[in-house]
Structures are given as C-alpha cells and as structure tokens.
Length: 273
Image (cartoon, rainbow, N blue to C red; front, side, top):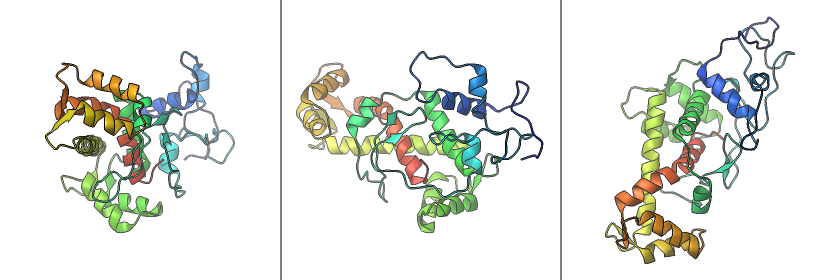
C-alpha cells in the first residue's frame, strides 16, 4: 500500500468485487427494507492504493463480523477452525448447518432442518461466496491460485500437506497446476451434486431409485422435521401425485436446497470461515 494519506472519495476507482463486499458489509444484520447512504456504504470499502496501511489513521478498522475481499487476501493470520454447528453467512444468517466431510467424500453430519430453514441462495449470492473463497487464496491478486500457493495457504491454517495436495488435485481436474475462479465454481457444483446423490441413497432404503412416502417421511422425521413438515415437503415434491419421487425430481429440489450447505462444506475443507 502507498504511504500518502487520504480517505476513499467519490472519485476513488473500485472493482465490482470491492463494491459488492462493501454493500454486503454495510447491510449486515439490518432488516429488510432498511436504507443506507452511499457514504455509509463507502465506509466499508477496503483502503485504496493511496491510503495508509491498515494500522494507520485514515483506514477503516476491520469489522470483526465481516471481512472484505481485500482483508481476506492480505490477512495472513492463521484462521481458527470453524465452530461446530451452523455457520454464519455473509449476511449474518444461519446457512446450511453442514459439518465437514470426511476423506472419501462421505458426509459426517448434516442438519436438514437448518438447510431447509435457511431458504434458497440466489445465483449472485452463490457466486459471491465462491469468489470470496477464491480471493482468500489468491494472495497476489493474479486471478490464479498455483499449487504452491494453495498448499502453503492451507498448511498455514493447520491442514496437513498431503490432505491439501489431495484437495488441490480434486479442484484441478484439468491438471494444469493452476486454479481459476471457474474451477472453484465447477468444484462447488460437483460437490453439491455429490451431496444430492449421498442423501438420496440414504433415503432410498429399497434401492430401487424411487422414494416411497414411507421412506421419505421416516427419513425426515429422523432429521429434524415434524410429521406435518415432512408431509408438506412430500406433497411439494410429488407434484404429479403418483406416490413416488424419482431421483430427477429429488435432485431438482435438493440441489437448490443444499446449495448453501455445500458452500459451507467447501469453505470448511479450505480452512475458511
């Protein structure tokens, strides 16, 4: 960062990512319909290149409940492991309720109630979260994360080197030794579909790739839903009323419902909050 003094002004150029981060940070914890001035939103922008370092006067202090893309990229302090239970999303609401996946891809624990109650994530929210994960690892802002950069960052967070290498190889399907935002996006999509398949197998006790109402209700009764909630969910998914739900019908619902939980799991695998 430069050494000259000066706050962020109306003429300060910023990126789309910085603008998005500032808006989300400004509205964190506010109620629906609440308005914010442009000046208030601008106060959440990261320091511009002509502003002093983070510890000097003239810079905004870091919000302990929110980290901008700039703060995530420049902070090299080892991150603490995420607490057990549901995570807090960038809006302050509980999302997903997922716990880390064990090696080999099996889900070690998952809260369906939290996933359903969290609501659906929009395409923009999903992409914003993926972009933040990528930028947290793109330490030189080159828009590429190298193998060495990725493994070093995860080891700094206390993740074993072999595990970090294995995770990098999962993300780097084309074996270029470099990760891009598109590869992160693809990995999260594949991860979500893997969760959909895993949960469908648990539901399909008869292994006929069709869910009966008995299988469906029993499963969700054991995963935090009431009988009325399970019945209502069944009625929603069994739109044609044939008394069965096939994999395609389940997948179309579950991939949307599990999107935020999938993002949580990937974040935890990367050592991010």
